[in-house]
Amino acid sequence: MQNTAIFPLFYLPSVDYFRLLANHDGAVVLEQHEHFPKQTYRNRASIYSPNGRLDLTVPVVKGSKVHTKVKDVKISYDFDWRRLQRLSLESCYRNSAYFEYYEDELMTFFDKKPVFLFDLNLELTTWLLRKLKLDVPFSLSAAYEHANDGQDFRSSIHPKKESPLAPGESYYQVFGERHGFIPNLSIIDLLFSKGPQSKAYLGR
Image (cartoon, rainbow, N blue to C red; front, side, top):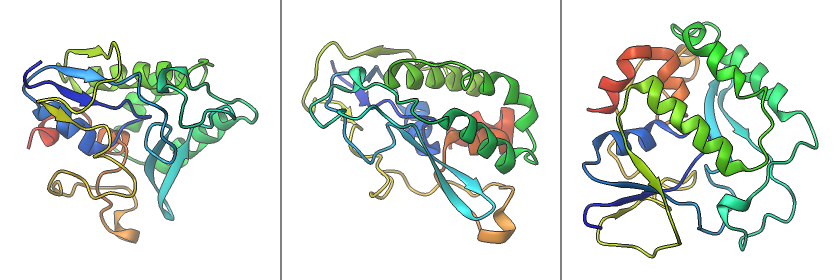
């Protein structure tokens, strides 16, 4: 399909992920048939802690190797990572301008116990699109497709790669006076800082 963008599905995706979504004029397909690549944002998000960048990771069941389709990757509950992440979010963002505005709804996701990582990411991303007031209709991939005539972002947003976008404008971050502005953290960093103004930021 012409002007179709293929996106991976990440855990609490980054600001640039949503900048790409917000500025794409065309169909969006979320990839669910790719083989699960490790050490990516598919089960990791970065937030701003008192000590700088902090990664939140959703552990997956052992055996989720490179030949497992991302839609079939199961979440591990061998330890209580949901409680640890809830505490991390509270300690990192309780003093941000809009944390209390979104806190109750966001924390309900940590009360659930989904089996599959893809389902958790899809539910969170759908909620984030709604909070950001971004109208981005999307579909799920029916099969794995190689690079098409549109845009393929499955490997362009990666912890070890430069962002495909020019740096966004800085905005106030709770611990910015300690460590300076950290760009392209999880979208929740922007949402907790700018609230309803986040949509305008993403469109720049």
